[in-house]
Length: 112
Image 1 (tube, rainbow, N blue to C red):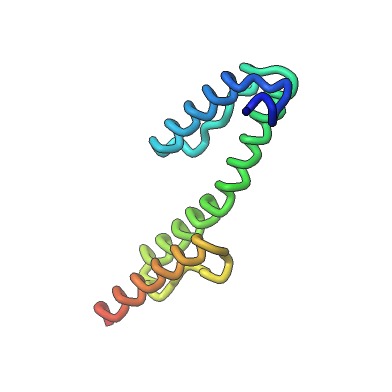
Image 2 (cartoon, rainbow, N blue to C red):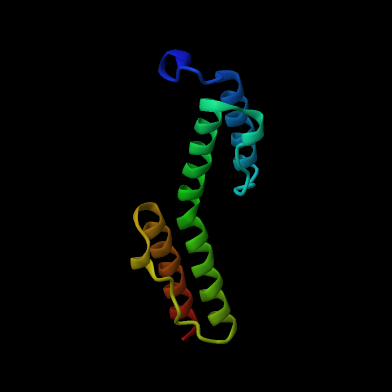
């Protein structure tokens, strides 16, 4: 079926790279990307598309990580009222930011 959908694409190369990426991602290696040198032609284009998808998917992860680092630095300086800019995120990332902000509010309530 794969070859019918993606004519000219080596399913074994794509599946091997997907399996390798799955293992890397599950281990927290979010910077891992498909190895384009393992493929040619359309197969290489598919792997490149996978890499672009990973890059786009991880953009909000990096943004949330940066926001957490900024908030943490402010807290370390004593400004414990600083929260994450939840409105800067969408979907699940906004939910995570809001949950962190609820936790911060709870800590503020205990400290004051």
